[in-house]
Length: 420
Image (cartoon, rainbow, N blue to C red; front, side):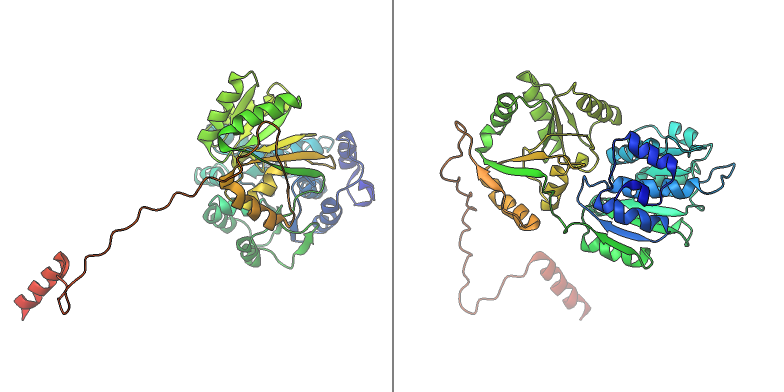
C-alpha cells in the first residue's frame, strides 16, 4: 500500500516523496495508524527497517492538527541512549516536518557539549524535544525545561538505555510527566527487563513485531573470515585495498583498540577516523560527517555508534572484533542493508573468538558461513588455553590436633575470659 493510505497529511506525504520513499515498510504500515489513533505502542523491528519514521510521521501529523500555545511547552519527548541516535532522530523530525505550516519547533539535547547554548535554545519553548536521559535531567534541574505538558513519550532503543545504566534516570523522568499521556516503545530488540518496564508504563498497548527478536536482515550477507589475531589489521587493509572499498564501518570492542587501529590504517594511506565515548562531541560529529561525505574511507567505532549511525547505502560493516554481548552483533551489522538495500557484514574471527561466534549464531538462529583468505589462513591448531598455576597441598594437621585460632578468634576468646 502507498503512504497515502495511512491517513497522513499532504505536507507529510510531500516530505516523504522528497525523501524518495513511496511504500511504507512493514513496521511503518502497522505503527503509523496505531500512533495516529492515540494508542500506546510496543514495537519491535530489525534495525534499518524505518522505525524512526514509524513514530516521527504520526507524531508530526497529530501535533500539526492541534492549536499552538504561545509559550510552546514540550508536548512530545523522545528519549534515546546515544548522542548520534538523538541527532539522527532530530534530522528526521526536521526532514519530515519541512512542509508543515506553521512549522513545528524541535530541539535535540545531549551531553558532551556545553549546556548553556542548549538552555538558550530551549528558552523560547519547543514542541518536540529529543534528548539523552542524563542531559535532560541536567536541564530539568536547572529549570531550563519543564515536562508537565508532555502528551507523548517515546523511548527509542530502550533496551540499549537499560544496558547503559539509564534505568534510574528514565524512572526519574517518567515521574515528572503527566500521568495521562501516550507512550511508545520502539526498539530492534526487547529484553526481559524491557518487558518488565513496559508492564507499568504502557496501557493496553498495540504490540507490533515485524521480525523475530534478535534477527539480522536477510538483505545483509554475513561471512566470518577465520584469521590469526596478530594478522587482523593486515587482513583488513588487504580487504579494503583488494576490493577497493570506499566506505567501510569497522567495529572494535574498546576505545583504545579503535584509536590504535585508526592510526595503523592512516599509516598505510587508508584515511580513517575513530568515534567512541572518549571523543569530544565535536570530534564525533566531524568524523561522522566526513564519513558520510566520502572524505573518510573507514570509520572505526565502538558499540556506542552501533545504534546511532544511519548512512544511506552503506555497503560494508566489519567486525574487527566480535562484540562482548551477542545482541550487539545485530545492531552493528544493522548499519548496512538499510531501507531495502543490500549490504555485507564481515567478521574477522580469531581462535579466541570461536565461542563468541557460536553465541552469535545461536542468538540469530542462523549459521554464518566461514571462509579463509588466501595468504592469511588461520593456524590449523588453536593456541592452548593457559593453565592456572598448580596450587600446593595444604599443610596437614596431626590427628586430634586443634586448629590454631586466628587473631580475631584469639581476641574474642580473651574477651570472653575477661567478662566471665
